[in-house]
Structure formats: C-alpha cells, structure tokens
Length: 294
Ligand code: PDD
Image (cartoon, rainbow, N blue to C red):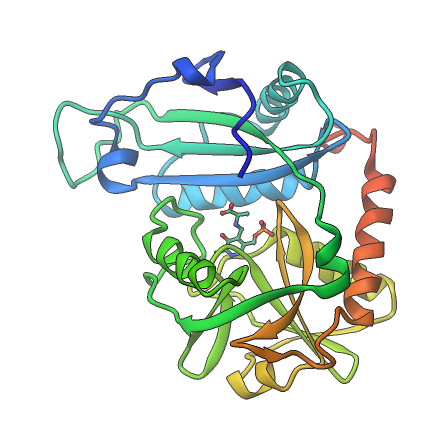
C-alpha cells in the first residue's frame, strides 16, 4: 500500500500530513464515534462526488450529526486537496468524528465541534493479472454490528475478516449470514447467473455501494438484466461470474471462492462489459462540474 500524498486537511486548514495531530480524547479514537468516505479521483476530478457526499450526509444523520459543510464547500475543499497534491489519479479519504471532549463520556455531547480530516493517496493502476486471472476470495461469517449501512470507522470485524483473506493468500473476504450473501469486507458483491446480474437488497446489514450502483446502471445501459433480491450461498457458489466493487478499484472479477473456481475460473464477459462501461463513463464525465448547476 503506497504512502499517502503529502498534503492533508484537518479542522480548517491544509497541513502537511506528517504534521497533522488529533487529540487522544477525540471520540473517533476512543469510541470509533465517527464516519468516513473514500472516493476516487480521475484526471483531477473526484468521481461520483454527489453520491459519496450524499452517503456521508446520510451516515452523519444516522449517528445524529450534522454535516459540517454544504455540498459546494465539500466540492471546493476536495478539489483544492486534489490540486495541492498534484492532481491526476488518486483517492480521497474523508473522516468526520464527533470531536474531542474533556474526558471519556459514552453519551454524546451535541455541543462538540466535529473533527474533520481529509487526505489523499495514490491510486495504483490495476495490475495486468486482474483482467487475465481475476482475484480470489474466501467466505466467512459476517461478525459485524447491526448497522452496516452506516459507513462507520468501527471496522474491527472488517479488518479481521480482510486479514483472514490475506492470510489465505486471497484479495477479499465475502461475508455470509443466515445462508445469504451480504457483502465483502470492503466491497459490494455482484453475482452473475444465466446472464443476469444479481445484487443483494439494501438494509441495515450492508453498505449501499456507490460503485455497485454505477455498475448496475451501466449494466442496464449495456442491455444486461439486473435483479436485486436475496442471494443464497448456493447461488453464490454456482455463479457464472462473481464481482466485487469498491471505489478505489471499480469492479473486479472474482474467479476463485474458497479455492474453487467461479464459473470458468476466468474473468467473464459480464465483467468485461462493465469494465469497458466504466472506462467509457469515466471519459464521459471528465471535465463536467461536480455539482449540478443552480
Ligand atoms: N469501502 N461495503 C463495504 C463494507 C465497504 O467498505 C465498501 C467500500 C463498499 C463499496 O462501497 P463503494 O463502492 O461506495 O466504495 C461496500 C471503501 C473503499 C473503504 O473502506 O476503503
């Protein structure tokens, strides 16, 4: 994982990341009382900006916080962060915590000023092996809390699940519960059977994925049928194709689950169509404003 880029934003100022400091009494540190977003930047332009900020606003609302900025301010700050780090390709991390207080109190204090932190990191191009061989995943039980629709920094179960996948030499942990597919430890999961893309319905148990939503709309544009409905473990294991989607990587083909090949064991035609659709969409939105006019 490459080191982040040098300039960050913390509580009102652009600062060298190496000098950014947060109090140990910050509730983000003490309680993971905090939410975040990760969004990619292509050609110096934050991608799916409105979708990411809308999800951040929702996460904040769900934890009883107000967004510290309106959308035009977020757009201006993120655009400046990108420019100060040299533009081009990168990804942005945005975190809002409930702030630091005088001591450790579980109950929230509505008077606190939030801590707002943003940094940028290099976005490595996809390795050649991903499009030729795909990536592997392992399945495991979903041990997370009951509000995974909130993009909270309380990611301990995700961290442990991803680490078990990495220990097994694989890329992602696909989480299952009650015999059904939920999502990856840091990605949404899509399943292809007989030419139809299946996606699990949203609810408190999974995060609404910005990349997944774009993938489904690009699929529709390309004439591929989509279906949002619960996906049983047996359907996952008998899939023709499985894909994971997340902001930093787009859509990746999963060609191996728990050591067994998915379909042909090679990246499939639906993934290829979506990957091409993504590239075309990136070109389509290049240079367009982040926010609709008016
Ligand atoms: N994770 N589900 C989970 C649990 C995730 O952590 C993510 C993204 C997604 C996909 O959402 P999106 O397509 O909007 O990135 C689904 C980010 C990349 C992260 O935590 O770094």
